[in-house]
Length: 272
Length: 342
Image (cartoon, rainbow over all chains, first blue to last red):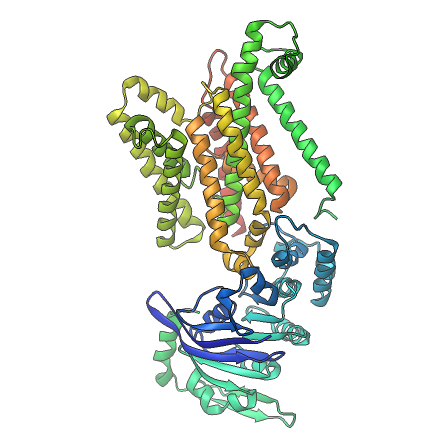
């Protein structure tokens, strides 16, 4: 199943958020999207998921414009995990995961034992089965995020879209969550903040800057000293490992705040 | 496992709900200024429905059939409709304080009804309920626009609702003062407080179908409402057509509110408090929550009506006064609890 963006643009409140972005997600790959705050990562995710319509351009799912497919059909093939989605309802962990079956159920097609089985498997998959009866509000951020992933898995999608899935998690939970995602036999597109996580887990990385896609390729080709300085405004040293991986070390005091301060602030005000 | 009832359990629950509702209606017919034995109530119903031919006092029979029973049936429909509207709006807007009264929908319906009744707007074409419906929709659209301008959020839509309510109440007062005769004005003021006096079977023929249609439409969307647990975007990513769901559910809420307002005036707090009570009883699943809210609302309104007729001997209070006396403290409680959680 191929997900393709064909020169999509999007604007909100008169400001251009995404400008002419094209990319093709390969089947089975883990594609990371990196970029500073306000570079358009979240907007790109919502266009790719079909929740928002691009102002111009098209998002295609297996060659069909995603807007032409029914919402249910899309939800059966593609699941989105938003940034820290929260609720005021007193639901249990299991009930949150059961929502993932929504695209398969209708007013006249009731819940079935099959749905129970799929939900159980999703809970097992994210190692949350032992907490399935717990109330949502008693769970930690890491546990909630795992349940969001389980909910997405219960949709039985082919493609998983994750918008900054590791925000507000401690480092142990960040790694284990990404590891969990990588272990799934799914095409994954994830907006990520941490460059080392992107280098560790992604097959390819897309770099966003001010609404444009400025680079797309393998981590070791994309994550260069020059590009990171240009896009993020920080100086780094990059160690390439023999197995093809790379490690990025940030070098404190080597940034040039005078040069970067203004654009960074300007980007921050546009929101994520 | 408490999450899905077996089909046998579901039938059992539905029968239990029906029995509870019938018991409440029975009490509504029996209790009043002159208490009438429950047996007489049953015999009256048998006489009317099946020509059973029990020898009864015509006065008792008249009070039960033409006065109390019609009133209880309308009260039940009204309670169910308002509770459903409240439950649906709370889930859709993800706001524990949403209900048709607080969001100004009831006020808009009042203005629409008064516009038709007194100004004769759309004479011959617009009936009272239709006028109320247009008023209700206008109010909701206005309040929504205001809320979006004010920045969404829990507080914004409530404040927008306050502004909308004030505006439409002022419009209603303006119309009444300017165009109504003194007698009309007195009647309307009493009606605006929420009032079941003067309700007859003709009203029930409007109220019952409105509540039933509302219940069916809401139940049809029960799973969509569940999908709104984590917000509209999350619902969209679960395959829900968000706009169509909004239109259908806000439309049916406005319809129910409008019909009830056109019959009994605007009754506050039922739509706010009953859904919360129902959530405590049966949980947050809409497939169970919505019928539970409808039943609780119906029974609550029948009991509130009994109270309004008996609490002051020889006098009937507007039922809106009773619901507000119970509902306002509950509203305060929800407000305080929401703050503690935030």
